[in-house]
Image 1 (cartoon, rainbow, N blue to C red):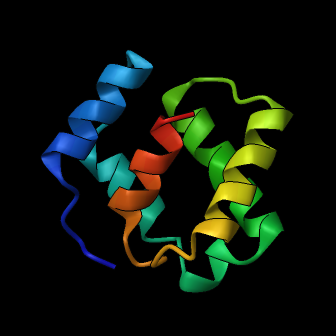
Image 2: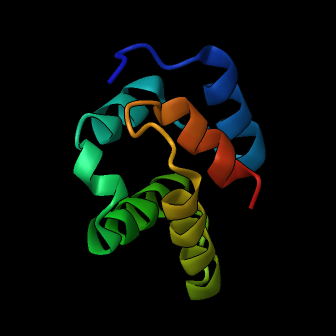
Length: 91
């Protein structure tokens, strides 16, 4: 996984959430994500909840299910955290 978080992605996250989430907080969370996380529903659900808590933005169960479904259907490269963040921000 790339250790560089796109500044544009971080700005977009902060703008979308109205919060000031630090790059180090995103990197710390991203370092826990493994390729298997994207295929394991329980781990993916936990990751979504961690992101929600970090941003202090509640995520409904329906939205969590939609995100999990989209990640599984996308065949997205799990090493591309920026793509995951962009996809989640569209919700």
